[in-house]
Image (cartoon, rainbow, N blue to C red; front, side, top):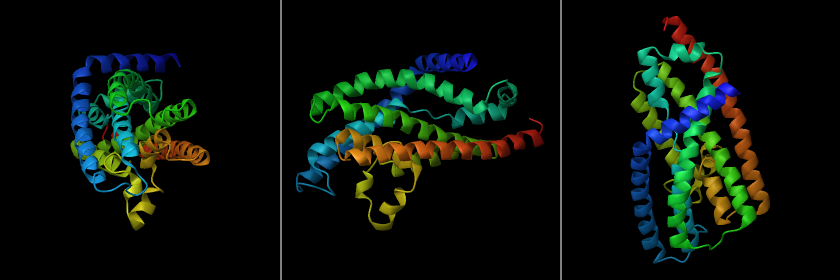
Length: 262
């Protein structure tokens, strides 16, 4: 484990060194959150409730989704593609440690910096807008647990997409495809409860809701006790499924590097 903790330390230092990139991304997401805040405010000016959401719930949802989107931004497809093109990926695969494990702990270190900064900044904005309304100790603990499980799901999805970089040089397209799918189906743009008919049923069977929608629903109190536990259980199931899928597809992707001789 010592080598993985070294990767975590490198990730934390890398996150601190790349704080400009993190702050720029946060500002971009903040603009999106502000736009969504005023869009929903204008909608609730004419409606008391929308698909079970009141204005108080929606205010919390907008800011909590903003927090979830920023504290674990990750995103390593471009980095993977760069190392593949330069041939440095061979050095990673030859190390006496799991390639995915090194990535995970490196991202965990970076996430530590993001979580600390994001919680202070976004938490202050949340308290200024919503106050302590709806905060509950037990629900807060379940929210934090769900938030970290959501980060693991996000890592699993990003790892699968990063494996596509072994087959194509267009890492930018791979990254943007993953971002669009994640933002749309996780509820970052619109709460999944707003999705109509077949689409609403489809998202229940996808892993994306575990990234953001489940933690947000736990925080806002939209889920009963059994539903919260069921949501967390589904997050754990998806973590194992994504980990298994990453193992299978990872072996095939690494074989491509072997065929081309690095």
